[in-house]
Image (tube, rainbow over all chains, first blue to last red; front, top):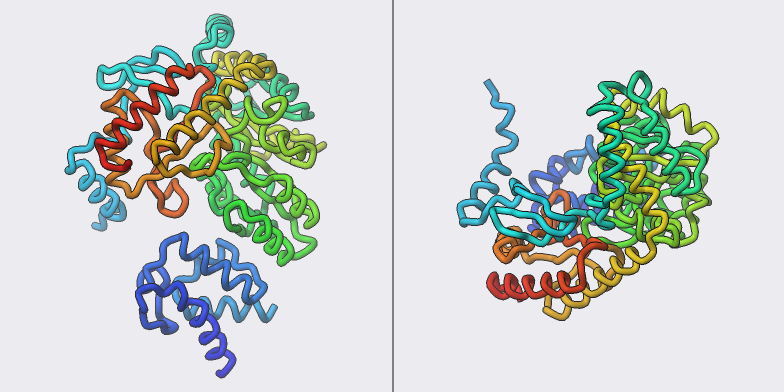
Length: 81
Length: 399
């Protein structure tokens, strides 16, 4: 599934500037637990992703996304629509 | 058994850690006596109040108190009922009439608190399939209104017109949209660029709700708020406000020109399923709102107070939330919670009460000492306040 790994790489690239602790990023990485992002960082990151893909990630949807893999799924779905 | 309270352990530990440093608990202060809108007795000591949102000092206004006393005598202590059953008295109608006149709008609906006004209106008008677009720094009552309803919630960066516009353009053209803004944001006391925000919102076909809780009575030519000041009140679909700030009582309201607005009284659950305000409160509120219509001298003095405090604190070397005085709220930024709590306590020792504000109520994880000025603060009191800030700031080592 090259599409999926491409999406993962793109999102990983967007995560890096916010990955202050240099945490290893995989699909299982959690935003709150592993990356230790606070709500402010989450907001800035979400805005980056939204602008990069020209999509909206509603707060309802954000509440369901805990891992990088779930974000890959969500953005894939939103960009396919 | 899982203790359901274990989720609060981190907060309990933080609180205990703070109190262990010897600081008085900033969140359990008691006003033993209240002498005026600007002076109370706290811990047996006469204290200047600089954190009450009592902007226009109406709490002790003679006419306001007289109206309340008369209503208490004539209508009793409480209504014991919902607005839609037995809880609408003459005073509630008079209060809504005063609001309609104050804002020059067709409809007014009075809620039991400002919190419930946001909770009720937002959760009711935006339903499944609709979108609510809100500023990330919105008040808790706005977020809770979103959470209670079924709409999709989209947040944009604080006061960022471009971020708002981009998001609006990405939403389905035919979906129902409600943009939720505030005139003054209560944490830093900064004003929203409502004119530009309302323009891009209207272009996207959205309806607009503006919470003017912290501007009523002194911003805009008639004290109608920031939307009036920026000349866009006519483009706002719903204004939300409160009685617990400039009006000086308690309660909340929504005013609107929407032709179908009255149906809200039947469908808005936080309006229907709670008891209405006591007769004395609506009588005080109506009297206060009518007086606020003609108060330009007091407004002028409030602005003078706000500008003087802002300038004075800046001259002393404090870091402030806004580059200039934009409202009657002046936020002093503290380096961290410990220093903030120590400064708060030192101010109280010096006979000055301000609000200690901390995350999650504050933006960007800041600890703030939030000062709200009153039109009844004398110029001498403002000078006194600055003097106390200087003493406390030096004692704690912030300046």
